[in-house]
Image (cartoon, rainbow, N blue to C red):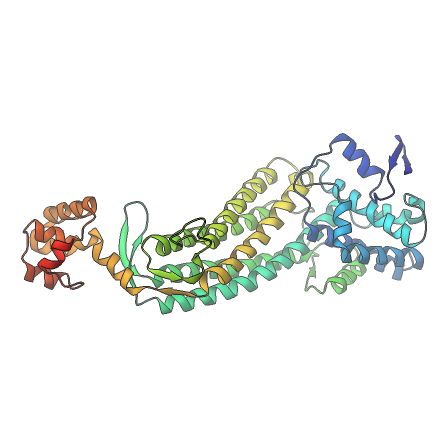
Length: 447
C-alpha cells in the first residue's frame, strides 16, 4: 500500500493502482461500472501528452530526463493496452467531464514515468511539470484534439470499407438487373421492378455517405494548437495529415459538428437496416436470392433459412440509433454541454463509427459475397402478384379489375387463375395477356 496526500488529506492506494489521489477521490464520490472509455481515445490523449513532452524537452523547458521518461511512459501505455485498460477507472457515465478523464490518464502516465525513473509511485514532485500541462493545453483541448484524431482514424477505415461495399453493390446491381421481382415500397404500395434496383439504390446511398465522410474527416483534422512545436510533434507521432486551425474558432467547438457527424452515421445505419430487411425477405420468403451463407445451424431452423449476418447488422443499427439519441440529448443539454458530457458524447460517437465499420464489413464478407439471383422464383413472384390485374383494365374496366386484384390477394391465387374461374376472359385471351407461364385448364385445376 502507498499513501498520497492533497489539501483534503490522505488517501491509501494499492501498489498495483497506477492512478492517483484525484481519481481515487472521484471514485469515492461515484464509483460505478458503466461503458468503458474507448481505448483509442485514451491512447490519443496519451499521444497528445507525449507530443507536449517532446516539444517542451526540445525547447529546454523540461529537462531531458523528465521529457524522456514521459515519452517512454507514453510508449509503454500505448503498447500495453491491457495494462492501460485496467488503470482507466473513469467510465463514460462519470461526471466531471473532460477533466476527470484527463486527470485519470495523467496520473497513470506520471506513475509509469516515476517507475521508469526507479522512484516510488505517487512522488509527483519529480514530474510536477506534467501535472501543470494545462498551461499549454487545457483538459478540454487535450480531450477534443484526441477525439478528433480518433474519429478521423476511424473515418479513414470506414471510407475504405464503404468504397468496397459500393463497388460490390454496383456489380451485383448490374448482374441482377435482368431478374424481375416485386418490390414492396411500404405496407400496400408495391411495384414490379428488377432485383438489382435495390442493390443500386443502396450503392447510391452509401456512395453519398462516403463523400460526406471525407468532408467530415477534413473538418475533424483542423486541430487547435497555440504551440506550433507541439502541433508538429503530434503530426510526426501519428503520421496524420492534420492542419493547424488559425481561424480563431471558439473553443471548444459548437455541438453542430458532432450532431451532424452522429446524424450521418445514423443515416448510413438506416440504409443498411432497410437493405438487410429486404435481403432477408428475398432470401427467406420469396427465395429470389440464393445465398450459401444463410444457414446458421439446424438447431435454430432445420429448413436452413436463418440469416444471421443481416440480423446481426440490424442489431448493430439499433445500437447506433441509440448512440445518436444519446449524443443529441447530451450535446443539447445546456451551455458547455460538450465539456460537461464529453466522456459520454465521445464514447457514443466513437462506438457508433466503429460499429458502422463493423456492419459494413459484415455486409461485404457475409452478405454480398457469394450471393446470386434465382430468376425462376422472381418470375413466380411477378406472375403471382395482384398487380397483374392492371393488364385487365382495358378489357374489363377499372372496377372489375380492382375486384379481381382483391380476390387474388385474398385467395393468394394468380390473377390469370381468378380471371378464368370468374369467366371474365377465355383461355386464348388470358394466354396472350399473361405470357408467363402458359395458362391451361391443367394449370388451373392444379391451382
